[in-house]
Image (cartoon, rainbow over all chains, first blue to last red; front, side, top):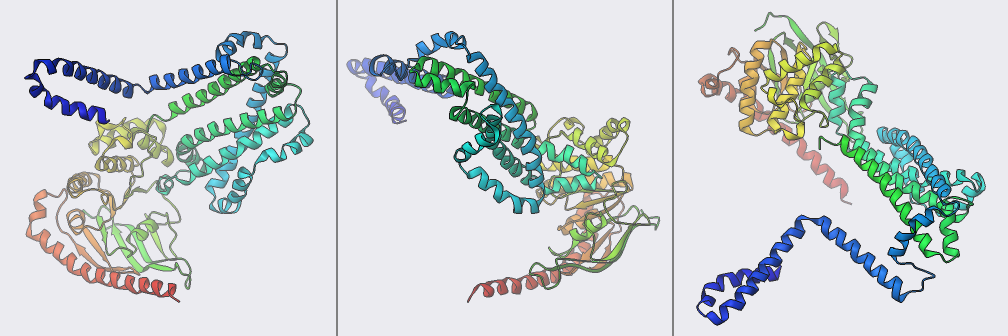
Length: 290
Length: 279
């Protein structure tokens, strides 16, 4: 900021400097330099994507250098090697099945979380009495670190996919309920009154007033629910499992295979980003009026 | 204007919020009787809290009064009567996620108009309020005045005999208000609707109304009815006429005492609250 200001001052000083030919030329070139910096600055400010990309590149570079020259290859692997190994990881016996299984658990867990969270959120949010009586319980359970009762989930649902799905639902359902309750509450009462005055039935009010109003919070809840389910499923898989991505991350870590570990995590991240992006796209389509 | 036929019969209507003895107990309206003639525009004016809007909501069936009855077209009002009564509210009650056109169609869908009539009626009512070019705009893209025009178009498309307007121009600036008032007068001269119009503005009341019902301070009731004998559509020149000024002054005198009384009745309430907090 200050450098740009001082260049402004220098511009007003230019005519005087022009009287002295010896002084004028270096000052001119310095000025041109300043202007170039200024232009680059405005260009970058208009393109945040470039800065974002730059930040990622810097992190990857630091990681690459650190992993190659300073750290124990037993514990960490440079990103270039991770990237190159992606194909190999995918062909490790059991990994495709593990990805498929985790994806299945994620999808089922998410579907259940939405199927429970949406109606429950609506019911609690639309009834002031239900909100006052039940919402504190929802917030309490939401705030409780559920990892502490993970062993109970294993006890109830076994070590198969069921316990992972259940634990995923336990993490995903509360953010959905809470965002939907919050979303229903900020509906302007006048909209319901006006719908009623025009003869709308209860179902019509739900369909044409409450649902459209809820779409933003519904999608926000879906996104939060999705990351909740992902967290729950992976935590359960890490804790105890015989298959799934969690099983392989544990195995790769314990066998000192960081390349494969990071490769697997990269795939997982891609999966999460793809799912999130799908939700975001769908949301965008419904939000044209904003 | 009137064939003398009664469109809305209000008999001894009173309303209180909460039960007697409760902290939030308010007697908003007491023993109010009033007949609204078919085709007339009746303005309700009075100090804030006098129960004008309460009465409007009782007529519209949005609120069941604690006393008295309202009859619309000979039938007692027990709930919303979308076939007979349409509403225009003070704040924008348009659905923000629908375009103006969709809003109007949705109103007709709620009312139960056959779908084949939607397009024609929507177009006609948009033209009537001068918004034909803005059919595909979202409410968020319109000015406050245009939003209220759109709300009026939605109400007109319902083709009810009665229109209830609760300070429809209350949130608008003086100039927009004036123009909308003039346009409304022109529009109403054609439609022959029965209109009950709540307002705070003396000028608006005189300019638009065939009769003005002046309310007393809370608990409100009709203190006086003033007739404005001036054919619709009203000319902008009417505002500067002596007749207008005289009527406006009469309203002012009537209201002034009531507003003082309303403020005075608010004051001890507030003081009592302050004492209650002290040890």
